[in-house]
Amino acid sequence: MYVATTFEKIVLWASHLTAEQKMRMDVMNFDLIMQDYYWTGEFWEFVEGVLEGGSNLVFVVGSQGAGKTSALRAIRSRAETKGVSCYDWRWGEDYEQHWHVVKDFKLLLIDLPDYRAGNSRSMVRDLDEIGRLWYDSRFYSRTIVVSVQREMFGGHYLLGKGAFFNLRPLTPEELVMVYVRKFDSTWPFDRDSLLLVGRLCRGIFRRFLRYIKLCVEDMRLRGADVIGVDDVGRVIDVSVVGRDMELEMSGFMRAGEREQAVAVLLGLLGGGDMNQKELASVIGVSPSSMGRLLGKLELRGYVRRERGDRKELLVRLV
Image 1 (cartoon, rainbow, N blue to C red):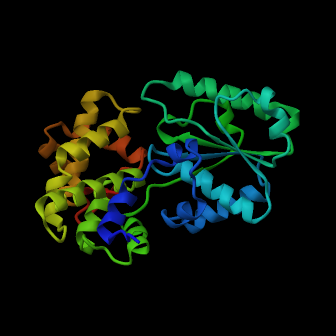
Image 2 (tube, one colour):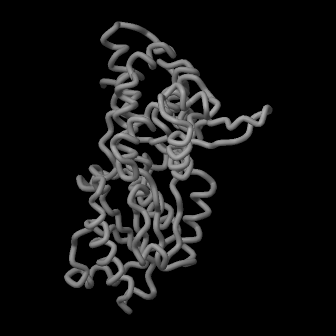
Image 3 (cartoon, one colour):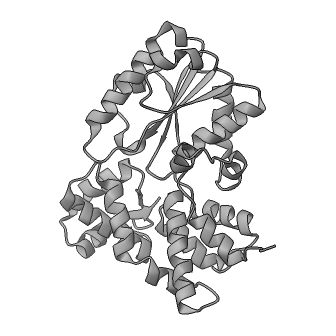
């Protein structure tokens, strides 16, 4: 019988379909969802609250690729162990036509799509429809859990009606923990190079998998046995990270600002904490423009500003 090598297992894992695609193909494996992600204690406390009926409308908020669909699957997995019946709502179905099915379930899971930048109209339309469902008296005794894209979160009355859980990006250490738990070591990376992958992906799990795949494919082409820090830096270069960051920020920054913001984040990734005035000089913008730019990045959780020993304003990545 053929047994896959560790290298082949890593490539297969890093090439996995997204959770949304697995759902649509009906090949979701809940045990794998539990194993292949890092679920925090805060998340499980939130899940227990959902199952106890603390609120009948709950939002799971996260960035694209942060694991919103996987979070809904984890909620379902936990619910099933406690005998709570769940219904995966394929968004777009008319609930009037499916009431005869839905009425038998206690927990309704709705996975909204990721919307492209500037397409808030589609999200408003979808939330309007969920609001119509929530106000329907037939649903009063049921809990509705909705995944919502962080970049589009806000600006709709329904978002103020329910509880919500922020699905935060994972830390580099947590991402390394997932990898080691899966493969029993960091190979073919060393710990420092795998931590760097975790930093470059900004805690987005889908991106973490993609970066790992890029690195192991490069290793195979080179005929190498290990992946070091220099290899990661060469494969996941400024163009790769910059393109991902620009897409990530497209919902709340203009094109010119995004270029400057990417330059700021890449500068901090490469050089560590920097003085705000020095950072403005390196990027080539005025101190006032840098202050406004950092304000937006700080509001979205990308950076943090604090006073240094000499009272200078230091900027560091979150």
